Length: 212
Image (cartoon, rainbow, N blue to C red; front, side):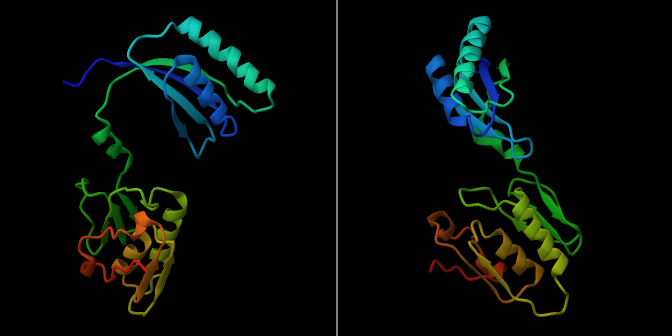
């Protein structure tokens, strides 16, 4: 039976430059593996470890602070260096990650959503159902979002417009282009995860799977 007891998280906020050094330090001090999260907007990298038992907060903070000073003395920019020790609820990670992927709308023309979303499209709104995978492209990243906006903005109804997607990743841009009426649409990639065709019914997208 899976434990429901809370976990204790020890985290250090640092810079991307010092990520590896801080992760190694925290792993060595607390004798366990670390998890790293980088916030693209703030530029802050958070290194965390999780423990079943409550750590000695005062002792751990003192050790981490001393180690951060040594890392800083080596010339690395630590950044904030904030230390946090908090109790966190256990989660079913196989399901909880899904909450980070919400439906995305691009005007009234295009809806991108994961398969578990119940959001209904607007009238005449093209829909792309795409679950996050190992290939790049869910619509969440600013570059993908920008390209999707451009596809919507530049589509001229009743006009033949072609689309070429080089390094297609998940295929999100090519699929969206086909749904919006671009023809012909061509997409290719050499990454093995991308070449594994992600669409079960390609005939509905107007695309033909091709791994070459």
